[in-house]
Length: 416
Image (tube, rainbow, N blue to C red; front, side, top):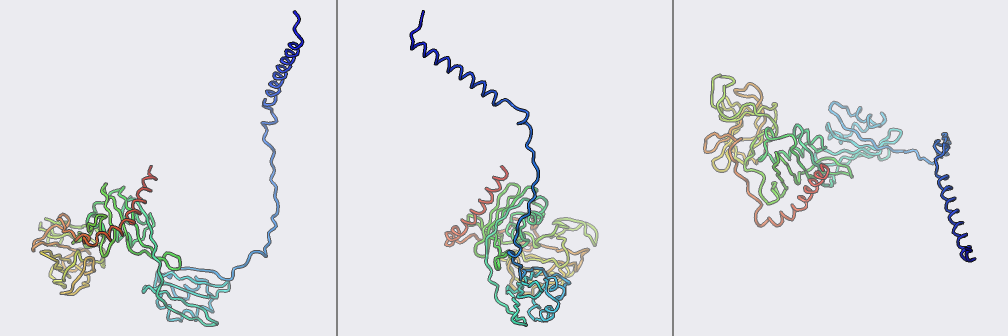
């Protein structure tokens, strides 16, 4: 049967479209088929070109900043040479009286020309003054002024692996801050026996800057110490350290009269190292090098200071209430009878006077004249923040506690 003309045209158009689609598919498949030439990497060859640099565009410096530390055994001439100063300039500088304030360990900063002529030298003295030596014409002039320190806040944390000082060294925390940390928590943590691997701490402290450069650490402002899972926090306020709730962290008595040492003989019965036989030992012996500082464990009046039989050189302190303490075998005594001393004041130095086989401190703690073990007795607490000062304390402590939280949360995030 014959189709109408319009249907013939539609059928022809449909057949053409189908043929075109089939041809396009074949063409497409042919286009994306892998080719051996495409698998080959493109050839590469290095191109070396000379850069047109204008040497006259780089200015040659005329002054250099040099900094070095004056070491024990250094002569002024040798030290100034290390700073790059010419020999002809060393002679007039070395004769200046201002350099008598230079001590071993002092850092000196010098601005020196390429020819070795200094335009200035400066260093910080132990009196917190800044000595500046400047060149004026052909001569040098010295001036000394009060150092304008700028206190900035630093924050660091670390974990105990072996000892407190190893942990602070690993974190770059100054030794003076480590000593303050041990002093603050010394009433709650025995740093000789209680430390455990994995204990951690966080410190917020002042760092004194001079001319934009850090020069020394200042006061410990706040700290957290986690010992065997127990968290302790301290904030400095007034003349003491308190917990965030206002509780005084300082005990009325420090537990140990030395900053760091080891117990060589404990409290109780022992065999006497000189006379032999078993005798009652009514104190604790701390082995430490001769000359180690001995501290008053609490505010007191010096009841006795001088030689006393087998004790050698001894200091006896009378504290508030019925408490007294004794410090024996001292190499040197630093107080006089009747003097008033504050907690942590130096009262003498470790030695081996009297009946002693080596340098150590013999320490006794007495209540109503009876010897007690200072390592186990409950020490009386110091007074908390006065009620009228509590709002001011809380306002002051809040930002410091926030810094401790910030570091703690940062450590947790890193651990996760």
